[in-house]
Image (cartoon, rainbow, N blue to C red; front, side, top):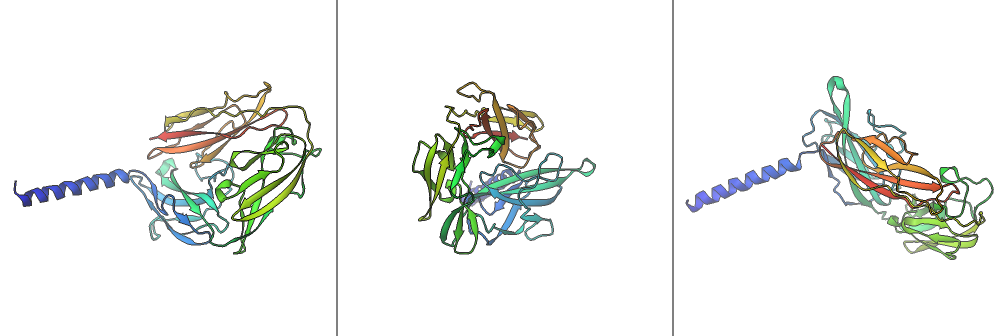
Length: 346
């Protein structure tokens, strides 16, 4: 074999190999722009672009923004979804758009920290109606404007344990209750942004850990009666909130949520989520609350039972759905959230 022949053969082999890789990468519907992990500025416009992969018959693509840890996802307009729309459609991409099924996409003005962009493609199946496929990416949204002040969207001072005061799951404030403090930041661009999450740069400190204890992920827990000062710090700014706790001082250990092991299943199968290993130190009965926090919205059944279930949707490529479980005992003490991932394969 001459050198020229060898070079031509090598080039043809390389070209064929690249084509093979391209075809493998284009098997499934995928967001290609913005890129995973991109750093974006709130209020700016970026280009949304998708690769349709092998999915044919796509009619439109809907784009949604929501926070990384949002509990309730948006509803899709097909038979596999239920619930209310909690995030507006940011963009509806059609085949006539440039780029096709994409276009100008506004980054939410109030965005800060990790945010997910969910793209849901509606596929026509003729007389069989439609089905949907999705892809989602995680990006980092960072304001260029300076933080000028921190405030609390709650009573000041905060009184926990007042008679008749309700909390999550319908219980009054009690020993062991876990809650999130609603914190907002006022920025120099005139926009108020929610900064409760540590991912937005916020840290918490309690002056009396025997009254309110700071847990991971910005969660706070009532551990005793008395007074404390909660101090929030973000971007060099601080704010403090006086808190008084007066609850039933009967000892009560919070329950522990167990959402089970991660699963990998085939599309079309019934999937069961089990919280049966959740436990309470005092052996009391538990209240369960399941929610979906990742993936295209699905119909999750029996969300207030120990075992929830759903029908694994049709997917073009492996997709991961994440679910959160919180349990509460009869005295109103909550667990730290537990998470489980379900990967659905074609």
